[in-house]
Amino acid sequence: MRFSAATTAGRFLPQRWALRMGPLLGRIDAVLFTADERGEASRMSVIAFSVRIVSAVIAFVSQVLMARWMGSFEYGIFVLVWVTMVIVGNLACLGFHTSVIRYIPEYRERGLMDELRGIVLASRLFVLIASTLIAGLGALGVWLAAPWIENYYVIPFILGVICLPMIAMSDLLSGLARANSWALFALSPTYLVRPVLILLFMALMLLAGYAPDAKTAIFASIAATYATTLGQLIGVTQRMERQIPAGPMKVHFAQWFVVSLPIFLVESFFFLLTNADVLMVGAYMDPNDVAVYFATVKTLALVHFVYFAVKAGVAQRYAQFTHGDPQRLAAFARETVSWTFWPSLLMALLVLALGEPMLVLFGPEFSSGYPLLFLLVFGVAARAAVGPCESLLTMSGNQNICAAVYAMTLAFNIALNVVLIPMFGLWGAAMATAFAMIFEAGALSFTVWRKLGIVMLIFVPAKGAA
View 1: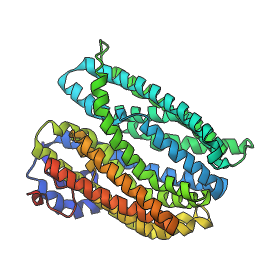
View 2: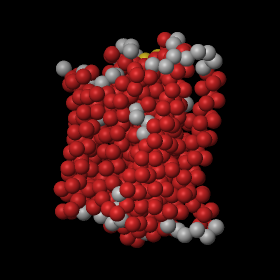
View 3: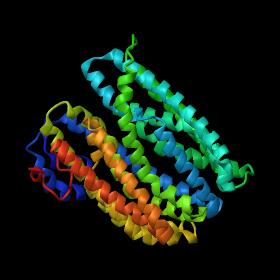
View 4: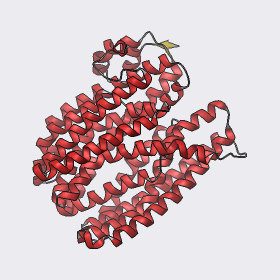
C-alpha cells in the first residue's frame, strides 16, 4: 500500500489543517513511501504531539499552583534551580541519550545483536557514573562559591544536585525508548508523570505543615524524579529484555564516545540556547523577575511543544532514511517542516490571544510579562519554519557542523543578553532570545541545504535547492 503526502496529513492532523496543508504536501507526492515507513513516523509524531499537548497543560497548571503557593520570590528561586538541574542533568548524558537513537536501529537492521546488547548496557552504566560524578562536583562547587552567591540560592542549589543522576538516567531511558519507537515510554515519564508527582508531593508536604518555599519544592522534585526514573527503568528494561535475546555483548566504547561527543556539544548548545535567557535573567535580576520571565516562557511553551513533538517522532526515521534513498529522505524531511510550522503558527496565535489572562493566573504581578510574548513568538515561528533541522543533521552524520552552528548561536545569544538585559531588563532578554532563534533557524536551514541539498524552509519550494 502506498499513499500521498496529502493523504498522510489527513490521517493524523485535524481536518482543517490537512485541508490547508494538502496543496503544499502534494508537491512531494512523486516520492512514494511504504505504509510501514510513513505509518511509524506519523504514529510517533502523533503520540509525541498528544503527549506534549497534555504535558503543556499539566506543566502550566502545576506552575500556576506552585507560583500561587510560594509567591513570586520563592517561586523564582525554585525555577532557577530546577531549570539549571534539568539542563545539567541532560548534559550529563554526554550525548549518549541521542547517539543510542542512531546506533540501535542500525545494529538491529544489520543483525549485530552483540553490539546491540553492548550499547544498551554500557550507555546506562556510563551515564549513571558520569552524572553522579558531575553531581558531586556541582555540590562542591556551590559550597566553595557560597561567599559569592546570594544566600537564598546556596541551599536550594546544593539540594538540587541530588536530582542530577536520575534526570540524566531518565533522558537516556527516553533515548532508548525513542530508538525502539516506544513513544509513550519515551515521553510520558518526563512530560506527564514527573510534573504530576512534583505537584502531588508538594501538596502533601504543604498539608503536612512544611513551609511553602523553594526548599520544600526541591524536596518534592527530588522525590518525584527518583520515583519516575526508577519506574521508567523497570518498564524500559523489561521491554528491552523481551526484544533482545540473551547472549554475549561487544562494547565499542571509544567509537560510541567519539560519535556521542559532538552530539553532546549539539545537545549542550541547544539546551543552553533554549534556557539561556532564564539563566541570564537569574544572573542579572532578582527572583521576582526570574519568576515573571519564566511564567511568560512557560506560556509560550504551548507553541514550542509542536516542534519538540515532531522532533521526537522523526529522529529515528531520519536515521533509517539516511542509509537508504536520498530522495526519500529529502521528501520526508520537507514534509516534517510542514508538520512543524502550521500547527505552531496556529498555537502561536492562540497564545497571543489568551496570553494575558493565562499569566494573571500565576498572580497579578505576572501580567507584566504579556507584552514580551509578541516579541518572543517571532523566534518560535522562525524555528518552526525550518523544522527539526538539527535532528536531520545529527542523524545524517553531520553532528560536527551542527554543533558549530549551535556554538555560534549560543555565543550570539549570551552576548546579546549581556548587552541588552542591563539596558532593557526583561525586554532585553526577550530581544536576545528572539534574535538568537532567528539566527539559529537561518543558519541550520542553510547548513542542511549545503550539506544535504534539502531545502528546510516552509515558504521555499524544494526545487529552490538548485
